Length: 197
Image (cartoon, rainbow, N blue to C red; front, side, top):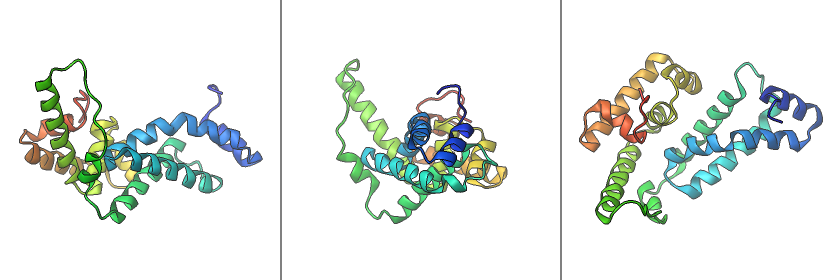
């Protein structure tokens, strides 16, 4: 069904309520939704649960989707809002949750590299966790997922100027936490993505 657009799948699902068409939408978008949620919550089990919650919300609301925006934009907005709700409700320390996850060893690196990488990962996660949900979302959308500031603003339903401010503020705060120049902070958080902002 590669040649069938998201819009056509939505129309077919609405007309027939055949879950096959919805499953095709899930298959197309689940990886991107999971990748969007993961750096917002820093916990694999929570990211899995939230990804499932997003698609449950989508199937509950798909008949009301007006298709003025692209399906992917509507879907990512649901994902971001679901993360916001989760972060507001969660009371426990995110870093404590992350420590319970097993580390995946990098066999190509030596022991010194492994220690350095774990320390750097931990510092980046701690710095990201210190950001408010809106600032964290801004840096995740732009530096990690490569969206333009305009695309991120559209997804968050805010002014482009507001999104520029959020990205700038997030970089500045990350830079302070990581001890790097603010221009480097976004790219470090984005795992060195060259087109970060």
